[in-house]
Image 1 (spheres, rainbow, N blue to C red):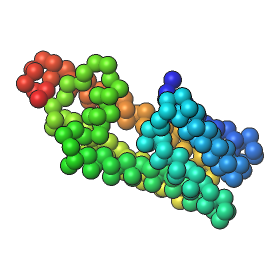
Image 2 (cartoon, helix red, strand yellow):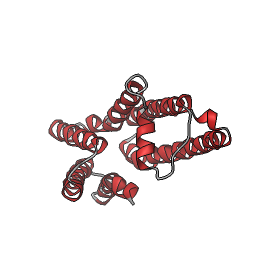
Image 3 (tube, one colour):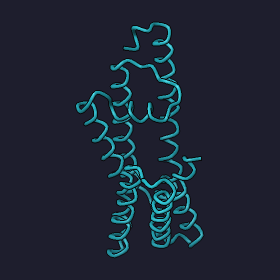
Image 4 (cartoon, helix red, strand yellow):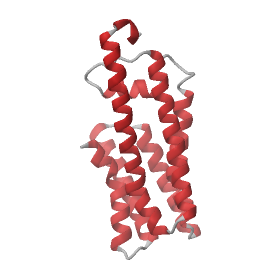
Length: 190
């Protein structure tokens, strides 16, 4: 359910883009409003907002506002790239700060079952996410500069989300294989 809530602003952006007759500015205003509403409702319900959502919201509002004022949609098109590359830096930094990588903290906080991976495997998984964020950001900016606006809008919904879905499936299979090895050999999970 949370995944659908997280996708709602992007879906609203694409729907507004098509319903407005391909008006990027209308779609931009819609995503800015929907994300602001999403942050406000999250705060009212949970009395906290996670950092990833806040970072994304801030980029949408700032880059969206600049795009509207300067009448240059390319500024907003940089948002997924900036966000993905920021995540890459944060995930990479977590390799060197603290006992656990970001991905280990995230997955262990949401998983009811303990995921048994060695520290080496956690670091490898974290680096896979760093690579994914770098590639995803690069793909976004490539599409933004190479293709027309409609193609980028479709890529924002289907391409970036599709890439993420495929990557999550691949890393889940990788983790399951590693977790099974750790379960068979408890010394391997340390």
